[in-house]
Length: 295
Image (cartoon, rainbow, N blue to C red):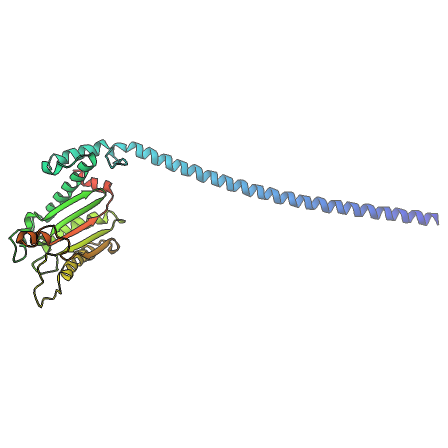
């Protein structure tokens, strides 16, 4: 009997020992799995940190390269101060050369460097557009009741620059025949020059306004009144820019002012001739316009 009790005790002891060992083994296995999971997470985070560090280093390197490039080209860059003044020696020299050719009366009101810049840009734009127009044999005269003027003289073209707005005024004798809303073929080179300028600034909006004199439209004409005449002429310029010279239509705005914005006396023939005009207003990047001053 004692032997049986002894054997039973040993069996129970062995069983208890086995249970404790399995529990510890299970706990160890769970701890190992948890440790492996944390290690894997730490490794992934380390990889992400390394990738971010490499990206940051690449970004810093790119900016340093850009800074170095700007520093190397600084003498050829155009720098404008908050007041619009030019900081580039090359730009200043270019402006000085241009201003030597400008009528002194036009410089009379240039009180600041920015004013001089505006005058210089306006002068160069006028010269470029006149050059684009010159050489056309097709000479158009002004409307029938007005003093005769020849479009080839381009006296009816002016440019006014008031940073950052550029306003180009073209007398309608340059662009249209009397009573017509179709742009003269002789003016296509001029419009092409303007179109190239506009396309160089994809974000620039361009307002084309038609202006008429106060004379009534000829009865039974296809044009209802001066609102329609001025509107059709503005639209004709816009369509030419878009269809023939590939300016993005999203940049263009056509509008009519009829006879309500005169710049001269509508009671005289000379005044009415001046009032019949097309204005093109744009707001460009001044640096691009400075390029017009380069030889």
